Length: 136
Image 1 (cartoon, one colour):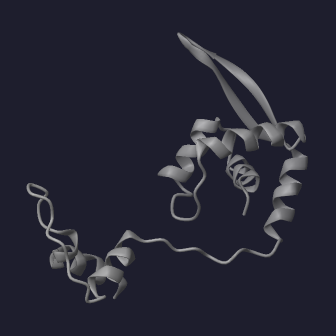
Image 2 (cartoon, rainbow, N blue to C red):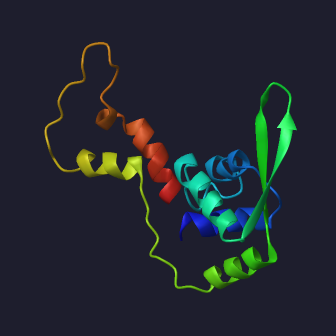
């Protein structure tokens, strides 16, 4: 799913700034689903505005730059609904835990950690057991 669709989805929940949209993906309602960075959100919002799928108005702030607030248009809601009907990409799963597990059980000899670095991350069974219990 492209960032344009993600932004349209966020805006169907209500008007928002680019910062607020980013926060939805960082630690908000969308944080468990997809990722979107500032570097992709703002260009997407610009394109959506140019295409008439969202509108933007500025709100003045004291001692700060004006805040740009985006709203989805009727045309944007239609485009969002149509995008939801498109075939979905295959899910991608990334995990630091699985990376560690790959090397934990390969039988490779572990190098000792640098002095003062604490225990070697692959030699931390308590930590691994905590993560393993999440998959049970």
